[in-house]
Image 1 (cartoon, one colour):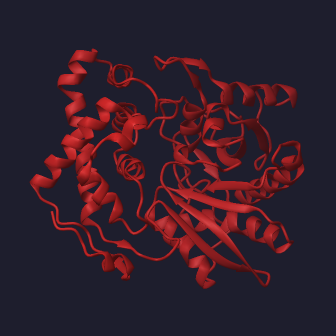
Image 2 (image 1 turned 180 degrees about the vertical axis):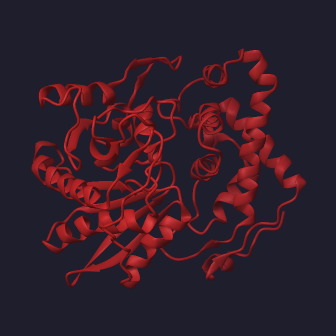
Length: 378
């Protein structure tokens, strides 16, 4: 392997490392060491290849951050979930022994632990190694404060500069954000936790689990059901734009304190499709910010940060620009009124992140309130 000179870290881009079969094999060997030892012993492992790859990223990330980025690039669903359990990246599994992580990953595939060890585990580690090598091939921007997984975007709002944080990774990897706004349907019915949507990911990550991986408390789901009962909405739809707050369940261990469930999808009767209107997204974002102001001093320290996915831009079918435009209409208005929120956006799409970057240049996203929205499957 050839290490780029130190000066390369200060040029407009950090060159990608040369990638070949030897590099892939070396990465795979180090991944096997991590699988056995676990993340809690990461600092004690030699890992020369992974440490070098992490150091040559534009932000000089850690090995763990490199692995999280690589796993986030895997196909959403079974592959990514089992990979996260295998390395201890899944919420709550960091300190699990290797045998327990292997057993839980095997359960994800529905096979015996021994079969998983001989077959699926080797495939998973190979896929992670391939994802890491792809990251090594890709030059990254060496702009201060801007990396591949987190970006800081300065935006001028009403004569003052505010800084937005853009996360380019799955929503369940968020840490130290007080409130996450989660899209849901007007029946406030969360999808099954094995689904791939934002709300399903948060439900899955917020569940309290035993060391075996069994769910002990489906806390976010149960609290949302309780809110619906207490507010007379059990079994009937709420108005689009309604926001229902719950706790964050096990996500509290990642510094997340509240989930605001934004009812923005309206199911079509007799079908598996639904509609999302930009006006309802703006209304929900505005109500989420109002609720944040109302609740902030009930917590110590007070709530300050809030993160928005691009509501309606996943299975809802809205173009990224329409979703962002609808959200930004509410966020910008609140910031213009002097709000001091620490605002975050999260997306898995580099294209969507690029639209957020354009806010720094004063380019506002489209906000077509006449759009009829898309349809998708809950």
